Image (cartoon, rainbow, N blue to C red; front, side):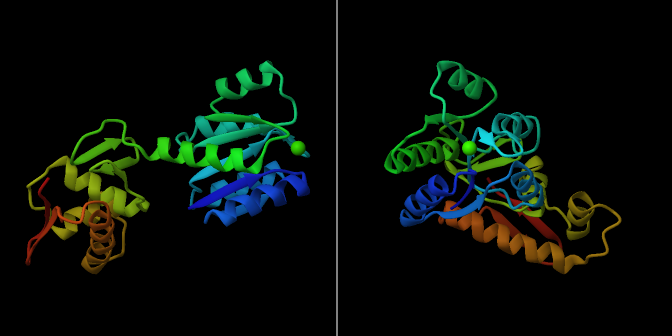
Length: 220
Ligand code: CA
């Protein structure tokens, strides 16, 4: 799982990155607000953001506020601050940070917070079997699916009318738009990767059915 670390103090960044990598996380480090903004715009989204407040080109909490107003509003954020005043903590949580650590902190404590937050972020909003949709996030049997935009589009289209057979060109139109110059094969390719992800989440289900010559349906 990938974690974006925005911290301008090289010693702290090294310590944190080392502690996280040792636990199996992939860590991307940025020292400037502008670099982190660029990285988040370019995608793919990390699983979690660790955000220092005092940065050379601005205030970390500004980024936090921007994220909460955009498509990454669900990205889990842990804020790091050199100041341990209650004011910072309250401000951080009010601006949408999910957790807060005052420097100096132990790397172990941070790793524990990261794990707890990721667990919380991936828990389904409702503990139910089958599909749960919340905006752009979809869970299957309580597991958050890590879908591409196109896979998500296909799945939402199929979920909107379960048990109905959707022709490939109808799916193509709905998900890629009528201007798409891609063919039926494109749909098949993305259905295939989508199926693999559903199988990882719920091996026994295999809810997408192929109707030869007709298209696909979803049997919830
Ligand atoms: Ca700093």
